[in-house]
Length: 199
Image (cartoon, rainbow, N blue to C red):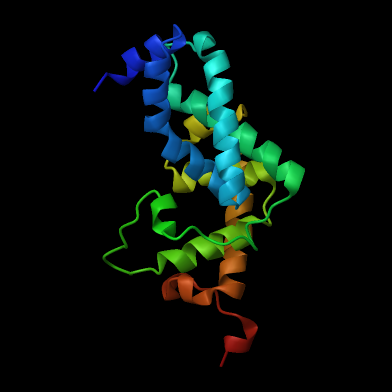
């Protein structure tokens, strides 16, 4: 198996076999990110296809001194947001793939509190459809994909303070939605008391 740096360099020089191997390595993550943003698996696959066509055209301009994945995330996020704006967020109404845990960054349930990952995925897609596209992208990259705030800022081409603001707003919307519509997914120690729950 070729080293990724060599693979990127060879693909940038027009090696179609190296590019195909690069696509195979990155395809699942690109589709997953696009899916989390668009809320639709077919749209995510369309976005991924566009991403790799675009990548083939611009790969020779990639700066090897930068992180390749961050650059690829920027292309992916832009493609997904373009689709989201064109078609509107449809996460609330689209079916999940047969194995939704395959789209999660860590499919193993927490030892402390086992979760129904399919229900969690459904809840996220439903509630995330209420977020602005950049909020949704920031939340997916930071909280689901595990990128640092700095990496998210580079991927979205914004300041870190903007990423933090997007995350703050996204968390507020998602938390309020979870507490209202999916209370069983909120740990009991984090639930806010509602007026009707008061003694």
